[in-house]
Image 1 (tube, rainbow, N blue to C red):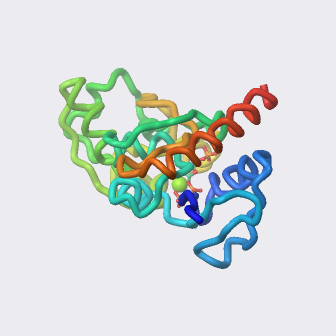
Image 2 (image 1 turned 120 degrees about the horizontal axis):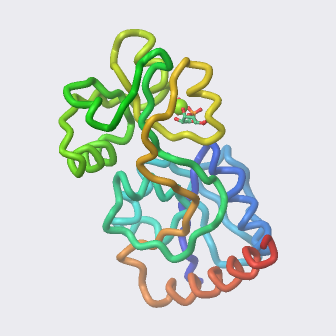
Length: 212
Ligand code: PRP
Ligand code: MG
């Protein structure tokens, strides 16, 4: 029997809510996170637990058919991948922040500055549009520590509650984009699996309606 293959985040903020929405759709997943792949007894679906940043490439290659992923990750690495459904959870911003002590006037202040980020494409596109040239330092995590250790003058990262910025004495000065979890679709999905996607989407839509 054909199954639709869905990627969800292996660990992190999206993982739990992604499993929850599948559960609310009446889909019970057999195995926990210990295995990288799991199936369902009551819906033809296979779940792959993957790293967030790898998911756009898996979609592009057609190794998975669909994914629950942050819109921000698609904007950074998967502009070519289409979104079937916005899911209304894991809302966040991708923002530029500077040390609290810095007097900030406008985005022009970033000219010639060193910015630490895991979202280089997002930052480059944003600053390019404003005619600003900055020097990017690409790091994969704990970005907010960069100004405190002298690695950068500013950072660009996800802001959710704002507590990471606060704890690191930073202030948000530019919101580049807002994001939420979305259901993304591989350009290579076949027609049989498209039918399964339709069924899943139908269930997701009623769950989202019920959540209000
Ligand atoms: C994420 C993100 C921010 C923080 C934002 O980091 O990179 O640092 O959460 O959330 P907040 O505004 O609610 O504080 P995470 O804790 O996932 O760790 P990482 O950056 O090391 O991957
Ligand atoms: Mg972080």
